Image (tube, rainbow, N blue to C red; front, side):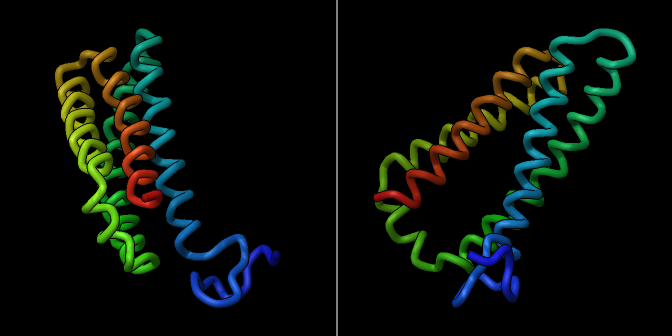
Length: 137
């Protein structure tokens, strides 16, 4: 398989296209935010303060990236919403995503590092599980 061909998601595709690059950007931002959230839990002093600030910025950056990937997923897989809507695990996943997002935001805003880190963990896991429930019937 070629590394990339015409950067398109249809036809003769390579390993890299615009969709996989956008997923990679989202993954880097989300895992960077998760790491910064972990550092706020484990450090003190100036490193803690920088990590806390960076975590907030990165989590804010994750929001439009997730929305962009959702729109791109609809373009790449237009058949996806039908089976996902009929899958009860997908709905459970959406509730888990919403709950973990609320936990993460409340932990970041109230400077409760453990709460933010737990919310971050559950957000990543619930996003992966919801995506899996949408794809696999």
